[in-house]
Length: 146
Image 1 (tube, rainbow, N blue to C red):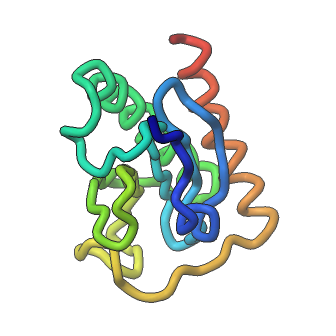
Image 2: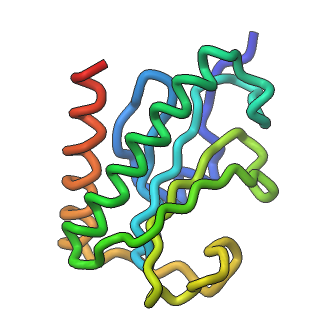
């Protein structure tokens, strides 16, 4: 049986947050949007149908928690989230992963999708610290409640 390993693309485009029950939660390294990527720790999974019914239910719980964390990031950095977009695309990085992205009417891609639009903007160190702390506050509370 294969072992789970995070695809290399995630290591260069995101910051680790926390290991949830099913997923690795990572902050996307793009300061234009509060954005969390969830990667289920299931070796070889590329599509939702590659994980069990129980895992899909857990994934939904983690998507809801990541949505709350994205809203917390937006509030903490002074850019409250108006809408949360959730997507499973996997065209460039086929490993199963879910994007949870906070959107605002004044963001640089509104109302279009964020994928493939413009260049990522690095977080400044202080804003990155604030964003991670806000996300962890929500995600760790979710872990404690489970």
